[in-house]
Length: 192
Ligand SMILES: *[C@@H]1O[C@H](CO)[C@@H](O)[C@H](O)[C@H]1NC(C)=O
Image (tube, rainbow, N blue to C red; front, side, top):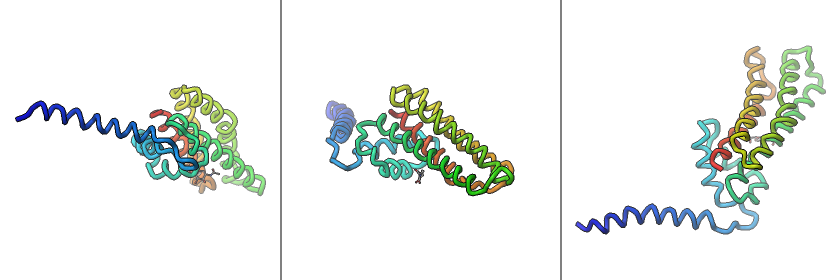
């Protein structure tokens, strides 16, 4: 029995893995391509997500954003997700405005719900998301995660309005998308 060999191989393997991981993470980015840390980030984020989104959602979301190309680390990717959530909420707010302007007004249950969601999305777009971005950008991840949690709650609150009144939600898909993006940003901030 060569116990020296056994000892050496058990330490050599983790070292080798560490070395390979380091080389891979340090590989220079290829111009115009998403950085190599995206698959690692999505694996970690999905594991930290508590099942609120999948690794596939993370990959397709981050690969779908041009900002991902310039991201150097997990903190940058968290910021990309924050910005995607802001863009999403802004688009949904505009969609709600359009529905309300097109005559879905407070005289109908759907209109009442949309008015309630309009207020929730207004807070997300103008109050929470700017605060969340500043927190994540400053590396105040605890504040950032709490803030993004409020964004996700507003999306859930909009959806709950319709569910509780058994009215079909005209923004079900949008509420789901915002909740998922906020959860993605939270998970990325938690591994940043
Ligand atoms: C909002 O997010 C969803 C899910 O990521 C995406 O499919 C949709 O295109 C986004 N919409 C906008 C306007 O960003």
